[in-house]
Amino acid sequence: MAATDDQTDDTREASFGGGEPVLETQRLTRRFGELVAVDDLDIEVGQGEFRSIIGPNGAGKTTLFNLISGALLPSEGSVIFEGEDVSKLRPHERVHRGIGRSFQITNVFGGLSVRENVRLAAQAVLQGRSPVENVFRHKDSFDDLNGRADDVLSRIGLAERGHEQASTLAYGDRRRLEIGLVLATDPQLVMLDEPTAGMSAEETRATMELIGEVLGDRTVLLIEHDIELVMNASDRITVLNRGEELATGPPEAVAENEQVQQAYLGGGVL
Ligand SMILES: Nc1ncnc2c1ncn2[C@@H]1O[C@H](COP(=O)(O)OP(=O)(O)O)[C@@H](O)[C@H]1O
Ligand SMILES: [Mg+2]
Image (cartoon, rainbow, N blue to C red):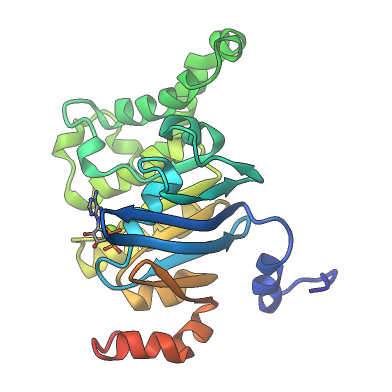
């Protein structure tokens, strides 16, 4: 598709369709015994795209994230990130490349302060550097870490809470902290697995706003069951069903897709 000088919102989708994708899966497959949780999946995600992954329970969404983050290895196929095959890299090496995965609440150290949690997340990435890089960075790394932690805290709206013990945060603030922990690793790609699960309508709205605000310049992969949220936030949506890609496209196209409607209509989701 030809690029034009003045790309408007109408051509954003076209621009994601062209150029090098930041993330690509090629024939990606993961089996658990007889079950094929992710089945021969080819997806491409463009730089800066906000892509949502939807599908019924058990569709393979979380497994897909685990394959991208390296928590699971594929049975077949590969994960390409920024043009390189990362399929065999360990999770921390992928974090280092810029693949950020949302930390679950269980990864937040309740006994530590909010700020210390953010610092630790940032430090994990610095320590993942090669020794030579670390030597060169040593002098300014502490300032780096503190600066980055403070920057993240203010971006997630927890600047005033930095000194509080993480375990004392209200649920919604803990989920904010989780987003902050991903951000602290300065990822190019951010994966969020149902970040609004268990939230009230008001907390959900605030969290989606926060995600748009602080991750607007990143590539985002979002698993979310609230279709209305997904429709509003996404550049494109991928629908999974039994591990297979049912459809990918901009929200309106996916909503009109007949196969998607058939898969969902029973539940009255769309
Ligand atoms: N570690 C595992 N061992 C065995 N089966 C698994 C494992 N993880 C996921 N599954 C199965 O794979 C399928 C997809 O799961 P999952 O990726 O969690 O789906 P989703 O996130 O879309 O709800 C489900 O049938 C689930 O039971
Ligand atoms: Mg899941």
